[in-house]
Amino acid sequence: MIKVILGEHESIERAITRFKKKCQQAGVLRDFRKNSYYLKPSLKKRIKHEKAMRRQNKLYERY
Image (tube, rainbow, N blue to C red):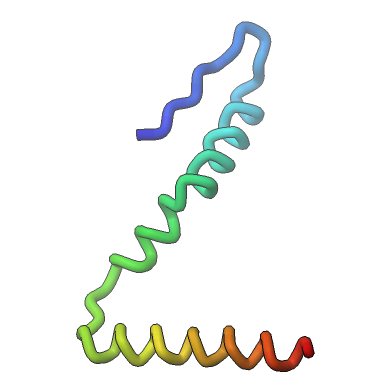
């Protein structure tokens, strides 16, 4: 659970910004989007393979 403690002279906007940054670093939104709909195991495997191929192609393009 992410907590943000408000300082004595800190504005609410600054605290909200810190909260958003902590959420992003913890990967809360990424996990939510990933689990927001069901993917069949075969589709997960295909997507994982495609990502690996893209990553490999990027490495080959650099050299």
